[in-house]
Length: 250
Image 1 (cartoon, helix red, strand yellow):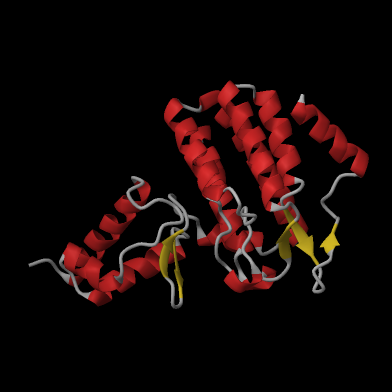
Image 2 (cartoon, helix red, strand yellow):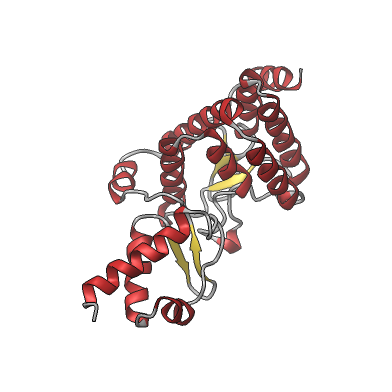
């Protein structure tokens, strides 16, 4: 009969495999604790311990009253989160911007037909939603990573980029940043940016992909004050922003 530690390892491996293979996609809610215990053949306390371990890795997140959701397909080191605590929100957003631009460039080179098809589905699913990838005040700590954006990182075929992006998003969901971020673009504007990014990636034009993503992220998540006024510390000048937009539309 398996020992407690063996059951714990088996349960952790089972849950982690469901995530890493994509059977439980990022953003999806996983089965409830009793169902998992029955599927794996272990006690609920063993499942709870495994879920807690994966949450510490940044792969899962439990939201009271809503369930447990997949947050990353790869482990996000707690050391990375501790490291990011030493930096300002402005610095973190700037780094996040760089990751998104690099991912768009890599995706334009390495994307497959399956990647493009998946991104088109995600784009349609997120149309009409301005939560890309920030959460509303009523949904604090939820929805920081849109499916469309995650699939760009999948298409980039660079696990390190994806892991760092997941770590950044986990950091942005932390309590100290709650209420300090907002979306600058409207839902219709978000759809336009997403379409431009996807068209560039699909055409394999990495220069267009870079410009389109740069224009998008500069109008995406921004810092705000307690009165919800936009802090323009990250923004380029109006002339610089317009030049980026003009290039991306050519």
